[in-house]
Image (cartoon, rainbow, N blue to C red; front, side, top):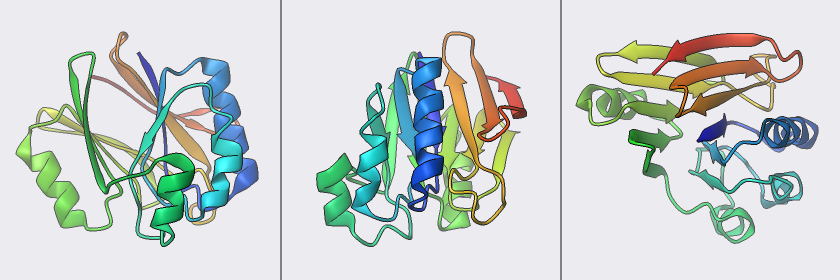
Length: 170
């Protein structure tokens, strides 16, 4: 399965459209969003995804009821098992909580957002993945990640240039 991962879209509709276009072109089977959509009108672009999307709330998602109705966001933590890979997803507002998830070693991959900085780090048996920010407002770099469960690879790409920003085998 090919999973597209995004975070911190912050209502940047042109950047969201670019991420959606890339995910559709690459034929992802699932999209994970790590929160900070911000407002329900992001549905306009996210509804163009050809794959289902699962996601969590972020600290800037104040209109939670609207986001739940518009795009189905329901919780702050998401756990899933995809092709035998245990994944936890959270926005990561509290670094202590992120570290607790990683230290638990219960997951193969812990995916978080919030910092607006892309990162792949192996900590024990767990990989910590932050796809960076789609919005590009804080770091100036718009990025997304891909998890290929068959090839057992994770890569982060610059959304504007297509250049790789990070890679790791699972």
